Length: 112
Picture 1 (cartoon, helix red, strand yellow):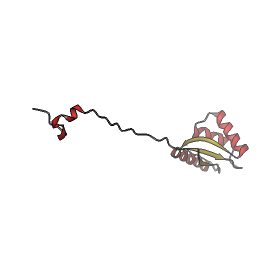
Picture 2 (cartoon, one colour):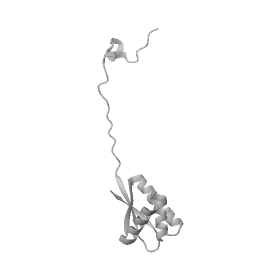
Picture 3 (tube, rainbow, N blue to C red):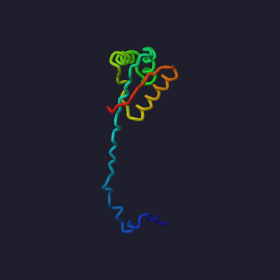
Picture 4 (tube, rainbow, N blue to C red):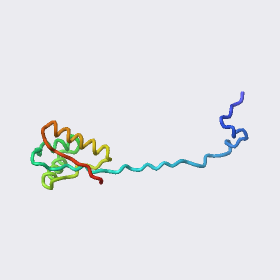
């Protein structure tokens, strides 16, 4: 028994002879990036700040210490640059760790 055509217009063989000429091109836009900025305060210990940077932002000890010193000396420092959802998640993690340990450590998000 013959194969049944799914496309009625194929009854005259058009689909056999026509190659797909149009391809859909999907352009994926890169997400906007945001800076996570850590702010200095007079209560959070330097050691705690270093540990938070290491845990939340996965920075090696030397880089975490450098960032902590920049926060301490300049009042703020960029800890990382991420897509918005990731930046907000990291800020929430910092705030949660600070709260659990009784510190007022704060971070904010700025468009990169």
